[in-house]
Image (tube, rainbow, N blue to C red; front, side, top):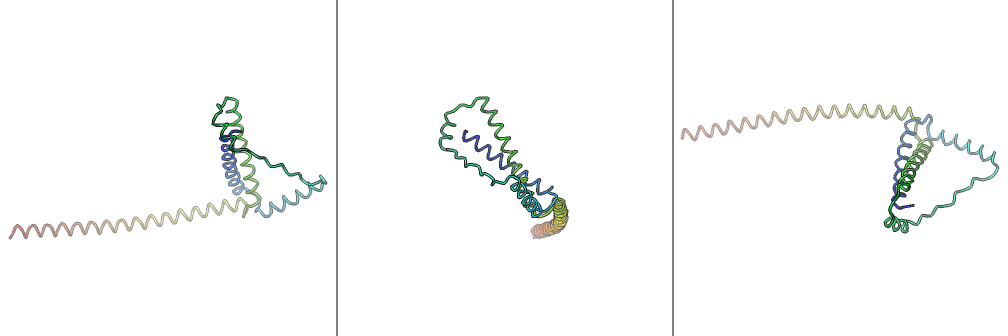
Amino acid sequence: MAYRTVTAYKMALLAGAVLGGTLSLLYTPRPGAENRERFRSMTARVQQARRHPVREAAPVDYDYGRARKLDALHIRSVKEDQMHNRLVTMGFVTGAIIGAAVGLLYAPKAGKETRDYLKSTAAHTKEEAYVLAEHAKQVAIEKARQAKAAAEAAAAAAARKASEEVQS
């Protein structure tokens, strides 16, 4: 597998994980502790039914240096481009599934509570921004009045000085 393809797969996996995790945090029906406990009980039932331990997948070893060299020398065909696109799509979907699972298992609150919290925080922030904008507007108006008064005073002083020079 080409180095660029592996990198694109990883990036799609990450993007999918972020999206899936975010959506699951917003729409989980229960807090993560409840989801984890439910998952543990379901896993225990499945393992009892199977009566043998879960097999672990063998680690995959990629030779990135060799892949980079071959990628630099290789011209990609249409079929390779299609395979690249499929891998990127698979990476995104896999990441979304993983992110959703992690979000469901570690959500601090139920999704409705999280959405309500975000709405109230956004409303509060909007109100604070409005108050801050009004304050900034009042400060700007006051500074403009001060600048106008200073300009008028400077103009009056310049006019007095000019009239004194004319009289002298």
